[in-house]
Length: 123
Image 1 (cartoon, one colour):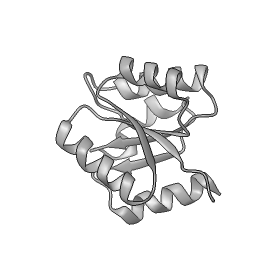
Image 2 (tube, one colour):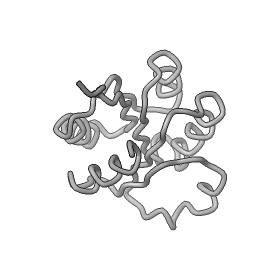
Image 3 (cartoon, helix red, strand yellow):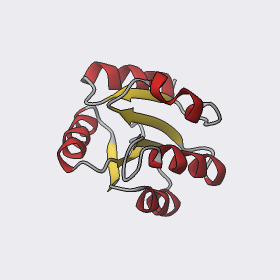
Image 4 (cartoon, helix red, strand yellow):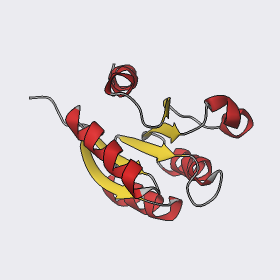
C-alpha cells in the first residue's frame, strides 16, 4: 500500500480554497489542514509536518505567501512548496528568486496541471 501524501492548503479565499481542497482530494492527496494566512500556515506546518504546502502567494498582503515560504524553507526544508496564484510567475520573479519551491500553478488549476506537478514532486 502506498503512503498518502499529506498536504496543507493555504488560501485566503474561501470559495477558491474549497475548490482546491476538492481537487486535491480527488487526485488522492490527504489534505491535513487548510489555512487562510501565513501565521496559521506556519503553525500548521510546525505541528503537522506535511509533505507539500500549496501556498497562495497573495493572501492578506501581496507577498504574504512568499514570506511564509521563506520561513518554511528555513525551518522545514524537507517540506515541498507549490505556489498558487492568479498571476503568472513572471509577476513575482524578483521575490521568488531566493526561494526553494517545487511548483507554480495558476488558480484554479485543471486536474491535469496538478497531477503533472505532483508527478514531478514524487518521482
